[in-house]
Structure formats: C-alpha cells, structure tokens
Length: 519
Image (cartoon, rainbow, N blue to C red; front, top):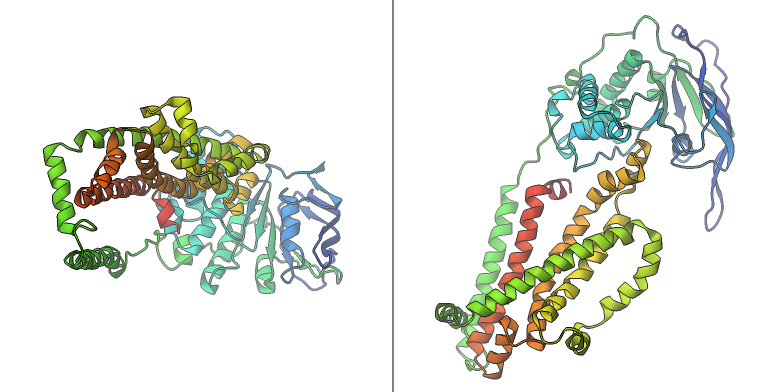
C-alpha cells in the first residue's frame, strides 16, 4: 500500500496532535491451502495518525479483514511488525476495540449488559460501568432499550449496540470491519452519518474496512491511491477542530422513528397447530387401538379403556403406590447424580483438550457397552440393592449429558468467543461469561435426553436386580399374562418420562428464554 495523496482532494483542517498511533511495517500473511498458498497480505506498510478516520478499501478477499484481525490480535502476521504508540504488539491490546461485521451480541445478556462486557473485563466497578454503558447507549440513541434482549432489536439497532460496546471501553483505536455490509441502504446511510458524528465528537482514531468506495469517500476526506500490488486503498479523514460539518441527526431521526425494540409477533396458526396436531394424532392412535382390541384376544392386547381401568384399580387398591414411590425416589436421586456429574465432567473435557485426549477413549468404550452386560458385575459390587438400581439410572443418564455438554463447549459460536477475546476477558471470565452460557442449549438438550433415558435405567434396574418397584411389577404382571396391568405400568413409565422432559423444558423457558427466542 502507498500513502500518496491525490492532488486536488479537499481536506479538513488538521488536528493539533499529528503523532503516529498505529504503524504497520512489512506485514505479510499467507494461508496454506490444499492446492495453493493464498497470499492475503504482502509487505503492507503504512501509518495511522492520532484522530484520523482511515478507510481500507478494496474488493472481497484482498486482505482487509485479515489486516484488522492481525491488528487486534485475533490473527498473527507471518512477517512484519505492528506498533501502537511506539510499542510493538504481538497479541492485541486493551487500548483497541473491534466492531465485527457479524455483530455477535450475546443473546443471554441484555443490551446494556452487552455494552458493559468490556468494562467487566477491566474490573470497572458496577456503578461506574452501568453509568458509562448508559452514556454510550444514549450517544447512539438506544437508552430506552437498555434492558431489552438484543434479539428483539432490528439489524441497525444491533449494529449501534456493537458500536456502543466497543466505545464503552474508551479505546485509543477503534477497528470497524464492514459493520454496515448486511444492512439495507437506508439504514446503512443513516449509520454512516451517525458514525461520522460520533467520530467528530469523540476524536477516536478509527480504522474502517469497506469494499464500498462511496462509503469510504463519505467517511474519509483524503483518499490515497492504492498500490497495484495489494489492490487495497487507504482513505484518511482527520477530525475537525471546530466541530463536525452539518447538523447531527438523532438516532430516532436516522431510522425514521423512536428506537423501540422489535418484538417478534406470535403466529397464532402455528401455536394452534402445535397444540391440535398432537391431540389429533393421539386421538387417531387411540381410536385405532380401541378398534383393534375388539378383534384380538385380551390376553394379547388390552383396549385403551381397559388400560385406564386397570391403572385406576391398581392406584385405588394401593397395589402400585409403594412401588411407584420407590421407583420415583430412586429415579430422581440417580438423575441428580448423573446429570450433575455429566455437566461437570463435560465442561472439563470440553474446555481442556488434554483431559479430552485422556478420557475420551474410555468414555466412548463405556458408552458403547450395553447396560445389561454390567448386571453381574453390579450385583457383585453392591448386591441386589437400592444402590444398584440408582447406579443404573446414573449410568444411563450420565453419558448423554456428558457428550452434549462437551460438544456444546467445543461448538460455541466462534464469533461470541472472539468478542470476549477482543474485549480482553480473562480465560476464567471467557468461560463463565461467554462459553458456558453459549453451551447452555447443548446442555439442556443433553439433560432432556438423559432425564427421559433415566426412566429406562430405572425400569431395567428394577427388572434385573430388584424385587421392588415398577420394573419388578412389570415382570410380575408379564409372567401372569395380566396384559391390562402390564400396559398400564408401561403407560405410567412413559408418563414419567414425558413429565421429566416437560420439567426440563419448563425450566428452560422460565430461566433461559433466550434459547428459543434467539433462534
């Protein structure tokens, strides 16, 4: 790249402080590929002075984003040096902030909590960070939606939250990677004016990436010619000493109305279908079952009416009350142990590759082993006892939670993780504030599966190593060909499994609403 100023281009009055803030010297970056090595950057050298608005302009794939990621420490250069105020950088700096093209607001945090994230990383006291975050939201016209979830905002409003999040840490250099590329023309033009106003007001040094020449011309006054080698142009704008030209527009005026959150409208037809379809399906199945029962011996199959009657008689006579209490008590004890152990070990394995490499072969082998193969061993270890039955539930519920939790931590959106890294979160903060919340959907999926499979563990354990419980009664009624009682207990076990899943879903909807809402 060159930094040549074309003649005849107008400039604003230069700022008082012309010191160099960023200095790129011989930056090179390549990406090896299966067919060829891609040269993203080759001998990039230029400087950015304090208070300038510098635009990097060029077509897609010419290395603009790569250069910004190297600047912020998300990538490393193969060759060359980068200095911030004369200090060589090797891994980013808390004096810089990044506005991503995909804004990646954390859906489990409110708007203001997203803006506060970088301040939490810097240990700013709660009262001060709340005040600073509100100041930034007021500056971008979003103070009235501070407590709203980010997924209720429009695309333009989310971009403004991303800008507020970056500016809240008071960076010396603000990096912006095509922040308006996915917005409609009206919203993009409004935000361009807004960014220009904020830059003029705050005087922050900005390095702005775009492939839109018109956008670069609007935001930058001096437009250096690009080097043919790199196909990327540099455009500079210096902050005015006597205020920004033109009357600043309010955020509401930019978007044509007050900044109110965009609430998703419930679709009544879809909700009705979700309720009616299962009821219709169940009615059809029960009707076909009832009709089939008229032509088949009651020894082989009982009608739905007969099953309900058998269940009512057993409950009324107290035949299964004690067995049901034992089963439910041991089921939930086993689930509590299995689910908690699965989450804890899953977090450890998912977060630390060394533990993953040590334990994964054993976990995969144990998960592939049928439970009934372990029955003789369990009898030797703990005998025919409540402990053996609880252990069955633990074993069958443990693995789905473990595997989903570990997989969830590995598959948290890279964008979320990079936001945390960019804002300077420590490893512990990154795990607690970004990675664990981001893995919650996977963890709940594992818990739902484990809580349903736990009923199978309960039944198998009682059928194989017990003389009590619902599983034992299933054996008893099966040997006596009491089909009505047998099917009644099967229905009861299925009902417990469905209830477990409903409880988990209820907890998710009550305390983790963002999981469904953010989809």
